[in-house]
Image 1 (tube, helix red, strand yellow):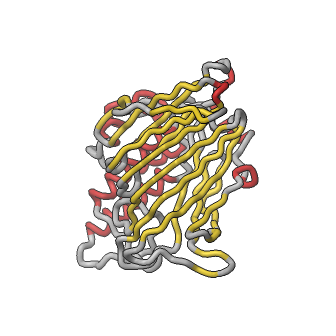
Image 2 (cartoon, helix red, strand yellow):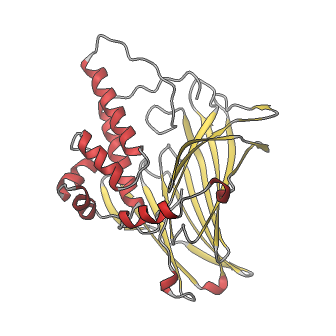
Length: 323
């Protein structure tokens, strides 16, 4: 975004930190007890942290980021918390506006009218296509949009996952990332590039010109990328980071694999529970299409779909996640 202030309160910074920790714990498939053991903390401490009842500490932020290989995402939230504390302790000093780097819900000018994810699997390769109808509710043009790509083959075993991706890192060439808006190709820039974690700015521009999202406007953007099943396993998680009116996920598998799909949902204040509505299924020729959707999901809610292929031995299963 251009020339937008992103000053948040201490309370908002604590909430954002808690949501970030909970998000990465879910991504890595760790229970609170397992995360606490890996970090050297008690389960109750982790629980209080995720609920926002405990103030973030530097030690906790460092350990959490390293343990869950979060690509400095958790550490960045702690830095934002420290900055918010410093501003609160110096009320006579006006806050310094800074360029917003990420369109999170707090202080954001963006909202999502419709969020649609379609994951296609051909037996060896996954291709994720994301379509989002974005609305600019702020007062400044939006010129870029941040997306994340993160994988984890062994949820619950961060050391094994880290070792796997050190040997088999995600490569930009294999992702074959594409993005478009209003029929125009969008340029993109890497923000973070790590073995199992990427952050990418999608730019509202290309070699032919710029097409910002102006205040009051809505626009569809679409982006897609591919990952082999050697790095992407049998689960897919969506995290609600902006106010969202409707969220939908489609999983498309070969019929011959005889897929079975289920899912869970988690919020800032509740442990994982089964989805309130089951994914529907219909067969379309040689593919099985599973569809699940929800309206007005809560901020920071996380929805996780998992599957198994009954026609393929479980020994072939991988574990992973992208978003």
